[in-house]
Amino acid sequence: MHRKTLTELAKGLRAGEFSSVELTRACLDRVDRLDEQLNCFITVTGEQALAQAQAADARLQSGAAGPLTGIPFAHKDIFCTHGVKTSCGSKMLDRFIAPYDATVTQYLNAAGAVMIGKTNMDEFAMGSSTETSYYGPVKNPWDPQRVPGGSSGGSAAAVAARLVPASTGTDTGGSIRQPAALCGVTGLKPTYGRVSRYGMIAFASSLDQGGPFTRTAEDAAIMLGVMAGFDARDSTCVDRPVDDYRSGLDDSLEGLKIGLPQEFLDTGLDSGVAAAVTAALGEYEKLGATVVDISLPNAALAVPTYYVVAPAECSSNLSRMDGVRFGYRASDPQDLEDLYKRSRGEGFGAEVKRRIMIGTYALSAGYYDAYYLKAQQARRLIREDFLKAFETVDVIMGPTAPTPAFRLGEKSDDPVTMYLSDIYTIAVNLAGLPGLSIPAGCIDGLPAGLQVIGNYFAEARLLNVAHRFQQVTDWHTLCPKGYE
Ligand code: GLN
Image (cartoon, protein in one colour):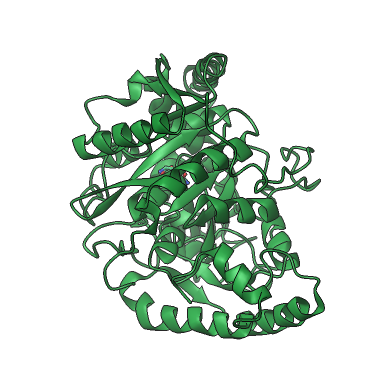
């Protein structure tokens, strides 16, 4: 059963070929057998999953089922799940049992999807390798010596290893697309405001966006259809009807105009990844698209801008973790200040502390204009580059990440090199645009991702563009050895 895609599983459930309980058991067995070596899961919710599966089976029989009813999935441990530990990959929240469900969790529950557990991630979603987790690193199923990317590494690896047909992630600077690329799966970051952030633990509120990991674009369309939607509890959530992401999947790409940003073909780009992108563009030409060179002149500002905006916002968001209201509390404090200092000092890991310090500095009275305000201005320029490009092209394509999966520990001592893993994804978050990554090649046994960026709320078009590619290529069907 693990070989089937979400779409195939949904068909099988409806046809009565197997039940959701059987399917859920099969997933739980695989997690039990294979996750020790991968470390994708922080929490496995077996009992709850089987109860949900039973309810889903009843619903399937009553004929009131939707496309996700009875489908097992894994939830990034950043989404609050009522009664279940929600750690955000941090010692700070190691004992935090969420008292409510995130909106995305509620929507998935209401659709009858079966959550089998919570996945490992970089601490508070800060990282590109899932090595900053309090629960230890996740291994890439393609090569256990290598990282799965991050911060949603557990979710990406779980889909790549066929532990689950789908999972959720969040993308603040690339954390859905980059691990999707490094693990060889499909990952979609929606338009900012398309998916509710309520109950999704905040990292950088003006950038964070939830989205799905799946094996195919068709499956991502099903997941997004359930995850998206207006929510009055998130003031940045956009009140706009959710498209039927499946209806246009087969639309022709005849006449599609693809922009290839010249700034993405820089010296940091691995030659194998570059070749994969070129070959993918060739496939699109065969499908009737034309490729034109475009320029995003302010692309080089994206990483430095992000590393002011994201730390600034995280320093504010994470101030609630003070040892009083949430999470870890140091023992035997001398006084209130000692309680704050030691709770935060002991509860947060090194990368989180680094970001809080940078952010606090950037927001301090004397430096606000020089850093945060300047970064917001640069952000505007980055957004305008994209808007200008979309006057002449329908979608933008390029690499998702500059290299295939790197070795565990390889970038841990050099934060700036690590930050550059998101050089092609970050601008999309700063602009609030949708983007996805699909498998587009294999370099010495490691997957390479193609990134497709669209205009605001063009998710349906992106999925159509990805789906057509997946009909004529088989990169997305490759499976890491040992997980077939
Ligand atoms: N790698 C980037 C960072 O460390 C992006 C993380 C994310 O998208 N959550 O901030």
